[in-house]
Length: 224
Image (cartoon, rainbow, N blue to C red; front, side, top):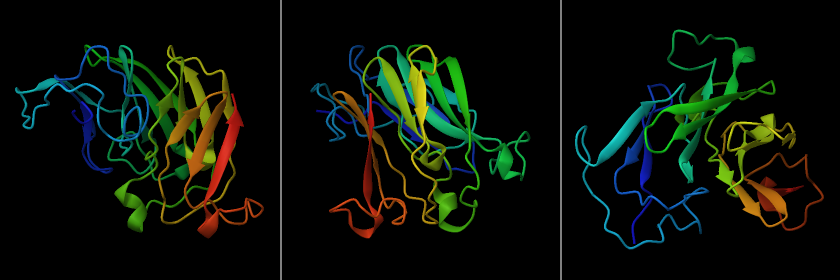
């Protein structure tokens, strides 16, 4: 048994890299946060390396378009990961204007590390200010998920967005406009016939009628 064959390193204010480890089995998909069953352990029993360097056990490394702290997923020959651009990033093109904030879903060729497409979603404002505890993870902490045909990106109050594997966007949905200054991250899960987003600590006033959801927690379901 081995853990995820991909890792993301860096900090929200530094250059972010996506690193692909050479031990990843060619047929193994990693379609959600912590893998197929949420355990963080791959299904095969091949041993995984425990040391890495610039020239050891690394297939390729890619500088991301912007910062972020979500995990990557693998679907077939593609890797998907999120980041944010346009605001509160260490880049010459970024500004101090929150209206320029965008979330990005980036698709990368699994074999070569080449960016195949990058889809940006404009942020729904106002967003949480980039300060205090929020700077530990920023505006892209939600790991995407996939059912093998589409990739679903949850961007908080900026909505849930579905993309096919070629970057086309068949639908998007709003999921409320609450803010939480602690900035909890969430990951979408795919359910048969439904697309479910478990949101941690959603603003209590948005969904006061949900039974069994204490301390502002709520679950949102979107029919597929």
